[in-house]
Amino acid sequence: MGADDPLCSEPLVSVDFEVFGKVQGVYFTKYVRDICLQLNICGWVKNSKTGTILGKMQGPKALVDEMAEWLSTVGSPGSEIHHCEFTNWENVARPQFQGFVIRF
Image (cartoon, rainbow, N blue to C red):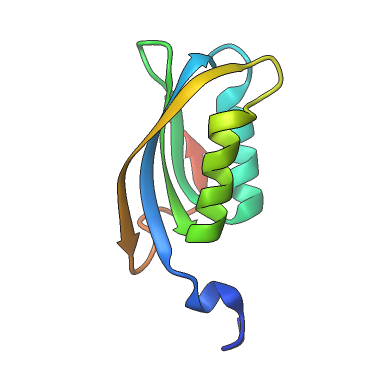
């Protein structure tokens, strides 16, 4: 990464998310993991006991915003997103996770 690489100057952010709707049993967690890995976002995602999807994302703000938009409006094929809540937005010096995993 050179000094003019936008990712060097881009602030890193961390955010927790919870997706509500018909989001379990439609490979939602797998899609989240795959897209986050493509975008170089790290963190984790899992199914909650209450039927929602929980997770944490960390990465460059522009990419996390892009993923937040996907979580709020697109989702996996067959999913129906009612809404998505984002909490604990914070700037981080470096990601606390390596890669992106599905937790069980």
